[in-house]
Image (cartoon, rainbow, N blue to C red; front, side):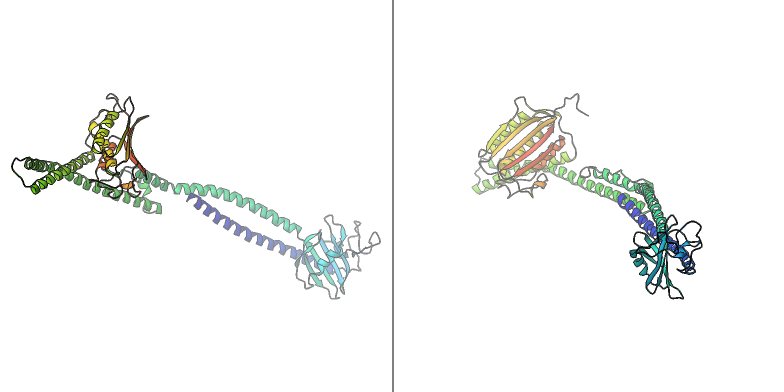
Length: 497
C-alpha cells in the first residue's frame, strides 16, 4: 500500500507538472511568436519602402547590393533584394520580390550580416505562403523554420519577408530543458517526502499487523485463554480512519477473548461432569459385574437363556467399565493432572506390549525392532504402555487377518521415536484429519471386525502430548505408520520444575 500511495502521489504530481509545463510552453511559444510577428511586420514595412531597382542606404561596409553583384553573374538564383541592406534589418531576415509570378530578387542576411541569395528550392518554399499579409511558419530548405509574411504592393508586386525562428526555438528548447530538470528534481524530492509521510502515517497499521501476528501465534485452541494484546490509545483515535480500524481491532480482540473464556468455562464444566460421572459409574458397574459373576457361578440350576443373558450383562458391564476408565483418563489429562515422572525403558515396554498384542491377535504377523541398549525417556510407564497397547490394538482391530504389524523403537538425537506400521488397506484421506479426535471411528474404512469406542487414538495422542511429544500418522493403501516422538531422558537433577 505504501508503494501504491507513493506512486499515486508521484503520478498525480507528474501529471500536474506536465500540464503546467505544456501550458507554460505553449504560452511562451505564443509570446515568442507574437514578438517575432511584430518584428516581422516592421521588417516587411521597411522592405516595402525599397523597390528592386533602388539601391540600399548602407553601402559603407562593402556589402554587395543589387546594382553591384560583384562577380557579374547571378547564376540560377535571383540577387538579394535591396531592402535587406537597409538600416534596422536583423540577421536571419530573408526577402523576395515577385512580379507577375517571376522572382525578381531573393536573398537573406546570414549570421555574419552578409547578403546571400536564395536558391530555387528555397524560393519555392516561400511561394507557398499566400500574399494575404498573415504571418505563417515555413520550413526553408537548409535554413530552418521561418515566420514568413507575403504582402501585395499597390504596384501589384508581392513582397515576401521572413524572420528566422532559430532564436525563439532555442529559447523554447532551453525552457523545456530547465522545466524537465526542475520536474525531475521536484519528483525526486516529492517522492522522498511522500514516502516519509506515508510511512509515518501508516506506522499505526504496522503496529496493528504486529499485534494481530502476536495474537495469531497464541495457543488459542485449548486451555484458559486471555488475550493481553491491545493497541495503544494513540492508535485508536476515532477521529482518524486508521484510529477507527485500531478501535475496531481492540473491540474484536475483547470479543474473541470473552468468547474463548466462555468456551473454556463450558468445556471445564463438561470435563468436570465427565470426570464426576465416570467416577460415580465405577461403583454401580463393579456391582453389576459382581452380581453377574455371582449368578453365573451359582451352584443352583439356572436356565440356559438366563445364563446367556447374564453373560451378556457381564460382558457389556466390562466394556462399559473400560469406556468409563478411558473417559476418566481423558478428563484427568484435560485437567492437567501431573503424570508420574520416572525413567522408562521404551524397549522393555515395547516387548511387553507386542507380547500382549500377539496373544490377542494370533491371526496377524507381529515383528519387533528395538535397540539392544534400550531407549529411556522420562514419563509415566503405565500411560506409555497404554499408548503402545492402543496403537497395536488399533492395527489389530482395523486390519484383516494376515496383516504384518511392525513395532520399532528408534533412539534419536534429543528423543526416542516409536513407530507402529502395518501393511493393511490404509486410512481414507477424509478420516486422517479427525483421526485423533474423540469418538472418531472408521467403521467401514479398515474392515473393522470388532467394536470400538473411538477413544483409543485420542487417549494415545493426549498421553503423548502430556509427555511433550507428538503423535502423527501417514497412510496409503498397503502402508500405514503411526509415529510417536518423545523427548529424551532427563535425570532428576536436571529435570525442570
